[in-house]
Image (cartoon, rainbow over all chains, first blue to last red; front, side, top):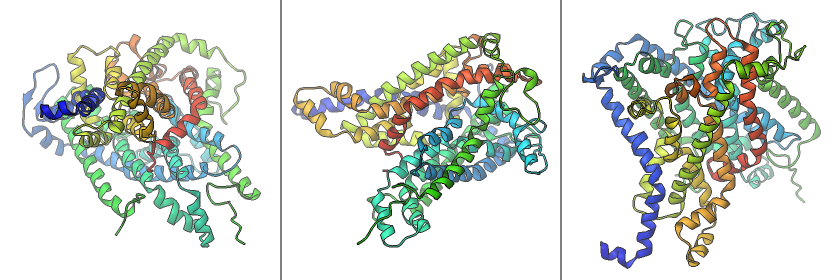
Length: 302
Length: 288
């Protein structure tokens, strides 16, 4: 072994440098990812209020959790937000990206305008939305009454509050839009020209060129958007504190309260692991389904 | 003879009537997109009594500039500004240094386990942060790092995030290998190739990572909420809440402070937009 290294000093040097270059990341991975994951699994088998020593309770936290109405409620609220919000959000981001790919005057300006809301500080935008959805003074109801529609109690109405959160999220399509736009820019124009010569219309071009060529970018966004949406927290923490009638008690808000307001570290860790497994299952399903609709260049399909 | 009308999506110019239609549509949606921001700035210039007038007044009359000095002094908001600046600067610097180091190793150096380790990087991209939140909090608490900036900076000196490593690696792969080889023949080490060839050529990608990172740290809410309890250590994101409690919100001051917080990001985004789009496109994150 040593002889091999002595015989090939350059290769040995490259190995050594490789490990030196990834060392910060590797340390970070061990300290902030692998270590905490194992630790949180272990903590979820304990009862631990931080100030008192941890006590091993086996699966007690999990049995408690599966008997907890609030756990199911927060899961339902979160699922509502994920499965209604993410597809709509992604669809709007795709439409916006396609519009931003048009060759018209001032398109750079429009790109900036559509992107700006997504860099607004979340506290500012959350409080702003609190005001926009105000039943008396808010813009949302002003717009409704201008259209002759009845006023709504957006954030005070348990049936509407989650929908209001989804509407809010539409102002943050900027990040996805930029990534999808980059994907659109990477599609060779020759493909559209060839399709045009073959007599394909706009819809056929979209269906047979744009969608398949863009599918890896859509897939990438979809995976990260679902993981992000499952962890919706800040807006609910600031705007509704989980209300009205717990209609916006999202999963991570419930977890945050268990951990940082009630200091029930064992229970909160069990909540975290259940969410992790749910997200893992959904990510796995998406990777399985992706074979059917995501197209990678250079890959030969049967 | 075949003439190709170059009016397909993404190429050439549209006919005039189509361009007009798109302009109208994009402008209309643009107004809706900007309405909350416009309201934010408009409210920041209003007198307290003028905020809730119906129908909404968009152009404040009279303009009350005094909201700004008031907002900046009623809370130690200037202090929050510099706290945020400090954290954003050090965290972003750490991200640039360590993410580019890892990206260089994954793009250019051969070492046993490289494929596996890179797969590990990608898999952490899909890891929900709540799973690691509680043990990380306990770790920092035991280190007595609560109410210091270390929990908000140190992790970013250890890898800088999977997304950034991935983005930079994809970009490094597009830099011709011949450049490395020429330098190596001249006796340059891997460290020199990294610092003097790869990094200078990767400026668009580094700019993209910087912008992502600056926006994220500038607006970060959860980390300061958990780790910074002493008001003197607060960031702007946390400090904004000081203008609002359960019963009343000083809207004009809140919006003035929000404008102060937002303005540097808008300037940054405007001035670096070119790099930003180019960086994302070149990185191949969008799938090619």
